[in-house]
Length: 97
Image (cartoon, rainbow, N blue to C red; front, side, top):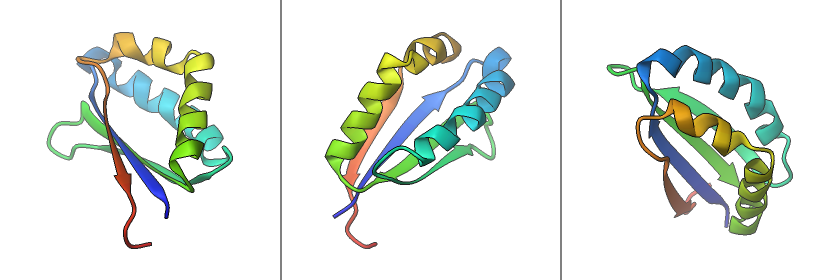
């Protein structure tokens, strides 16, 4: 059974374009990370500073390895000052692939 993660966040308006550009640059590394089945970045149609990252993994363990790697590389430290609030993460078991 695969595993999905949804990360919700709101970007400070002055950082919205910078963060979108940065995420577009680093998401190819996410897609090529072992166990990643896909990842997409979304912005809210009515409020572009609200965004979601939806990723799908072969297992919860694969996602944990990825999150540890992103923490080690400093991505979360770089992104945190651009956000209105801390990231909100939701974890799901995929029922229908």
